[in-house]
Each structure stands twice: as structure tokens, then as C-alpha cells.
Image 1 (cartoon, helix red, strand yellow):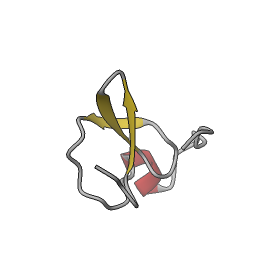
Image 2: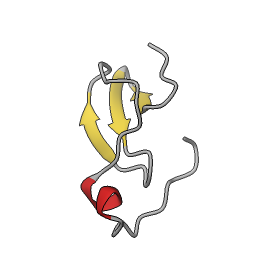
Image 3: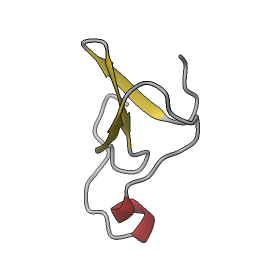
Image 4: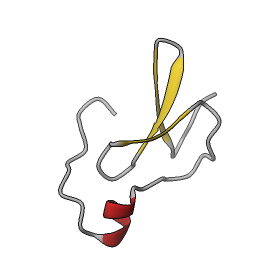
Length: 55
């Protein structure tokens, strides 16, 4: 499945949903709504993590 907004990375056949803001893993699997997903820290504006290269 191709995603336009959701950041889903596949490694060894397993998909992982990542935060659009900082890139941390949010959930496993490959069935996610194609929208932007954010961790609670990014949503609160207090996230100090930076999005990793290789989106």
C-alpha cells in the first residue's frame, strides 16, 4: 500500500507507523489511515526529538 501522508517504513516485511513530526515509531502493521500521525509530545509542542533522515 502506498501512503501519501502517513510515514510507514517496512523492514523485513513488517510495517511500522512513524510520527510525522519527530519520526519515532508509533505502531506496527501496514494498515494505517493515510493521514499525518503525531506522537503525544509533538502534539503538545514539547517534543525535543528531530525527524531522522531517510523518511
